[in-house]
Amino acid sequence: MDLPKRRGHLSTEQRNPRSRGLDRMSSDQMFDVINGEDATLAGLVAVAKVEICRAVELVAGAFRSGGRLVYVGAGTSGRLGVLDAAECPPTFLSDPSMVLGVIAGGEDALRCSVEGAEDSVEAGAAAVDDVGVGERDVVFGIATGGTTPYVHGALDRASRRGARTVFLACVTRDEVPDEADVSIRIVTGPEVVTGSTRMKAGTVTKMVLNMVTTMSMVGIGKVYDHLMVDVNASANAKLIDRGTRLVAALTGCEYAGAGVLLSQAGGRVKTAAVMHAHGVDRDSAESMLERTSGDLRAALERRA
Image 1 (cartoon, rainbow, N blue to C red):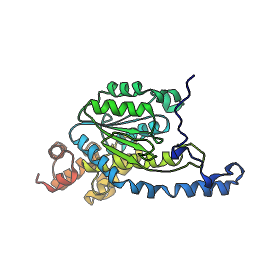
Image 2 (image 1 turned 135 degrees about the vertical axis):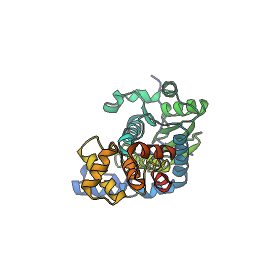
Image 3 (image 1 turned 90 degrees about the vertical axis):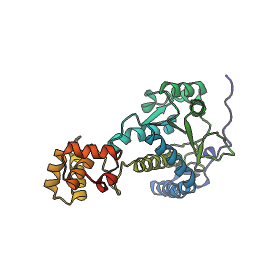
Image 4 (image 1 turned 45 degrees about the vertical axis):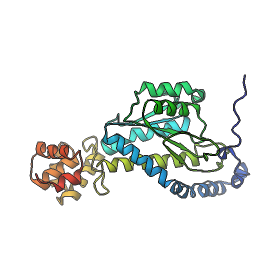
């Protein structure tokens, strides 16, 4: 068997001096070490602000043109991409095809480790082909250690197919280079448990993905003010209550009246708000929203 390429030089693979003796620590001591390491992460993400905002601009532009955001990763990175993709439709009422998560090893890898799947450049390229990546899409590769062949294969194929590309890693470009249109590097350093990038590196990955999709969805009108107005307010009791409170906040109606208005709007918060603001029926309100590409602020400000 051929020996694998050595990765011991990567910062994510180094031993953390602050967690030495972890197995001899009390729970209180371990808590302090882990919590102390996690406390540094928001500041590290802030260092990558320019690149994260550039990625958001690419993704929002893709959405406006009918394109998609396609996350690609392996292991923890892949699972986090799939998670973020799965959370977009219930949060923003987005089409499930707008944000896709592709993980090395397929669906089985969501629940069980399929470690060998990440080593194939060809499999990553094939995955991009399988989802039909095109010029309007953004492919976002996630590899906290930076080296995952599956991810690099996917990004290379995506670029060849005309898509824009983003790469997220927790090591420097000097350690592992890439050729993505946007390269986000958040150097988290050694993990508490050496090499366990499900910890700090996984946490910053979740932070970045949350930012990218949230900011992009805000940019295409999925949020009004800071309110989650594109929500399926007929799916369950929690969301019906949330939708009713949103309609009350937007219209000034009492809770009961807001509930009636929401029902008349078919459970659509934005439709209810436009109906109330312009004194129109559901069909007219939805036509107004269609003319503003779903932008509630623009629909409220234009004449009926």
